Amino acid sequence: QVLFAESGGGLVQPGGSLRLSCAASVIGFSSLPMAWYRQAPGKQRELVADIASGGGTNYVDSVKGRFTISRDNAKKTVYLQMANLKPEDTAVYYCNKYRVPTTAIASWGQGTQVTVSS
Image 1 (tube, helix red, strand yellow):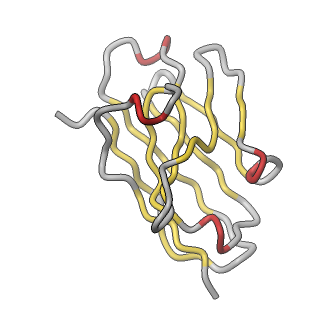
Image 2 (spheres, rainbow, N blue to C red; image 1 turned 180 degrees about the vertical axis):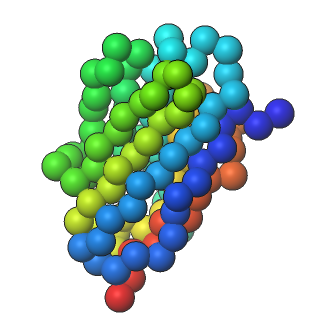
């Protein structure tokens, strides 16, 4: 059972932009706090940004001012608009319910690969 399906990744040059989408197939989506996470090669998965059911947002310091998380409850979709991308943003990006610690999440989707390289 796939709960979250991520899309929109790709290869982009430094300074470029991408928009990730996450289609959710969960009941009660509009009341769920949601988040984007990422996992770079050889590193642990980390929380990138989260959005509350009411729309309040938080970001990890490394992406503040460059990434924007948003949601469309009617479409059960979460977005991550990424701008001014840097090589260190290269990772597989996942969406899921917001939960800390991240290790408490048992089930993940396939994710979408983002590669920032010239």
